[in-house]
Length: 150
Image (cartoon, rainbow, N blue to C red; front, top):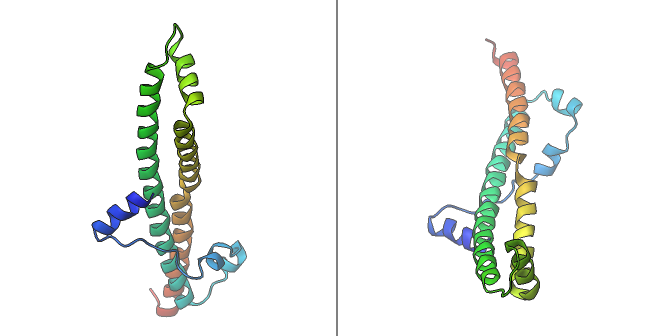
């Protein structure tokens, strides 16, 4: 993942941090959100959610990039090592033996599995956050109508 982050820095794209107080915004229950009655609070919450959407999307792209890189490395080396396994066996058996015999390959497989899990955990988060953002946008619109009219 460091390599992905370094590429972003080289492209002069800042590595985002989650906004302060996002936990409070995300943990608000529906009644609390529905009873927001201050336009400044609604605007602030919208901004925090928008920042967090950008943060989650960037984290997903960083993890996805690292996953693709490590997975390609794993598959290339696994194929190369399994081709070196002698004997009349199926490719599946050769790959199993190659994986069992290579500590480096086992380590890379663990890294790939960890990155896959991170990727799966991040998938869909931006969509869920967008739904919350849309609710807050409606609240903001309702408050604007109330405070400033049509």
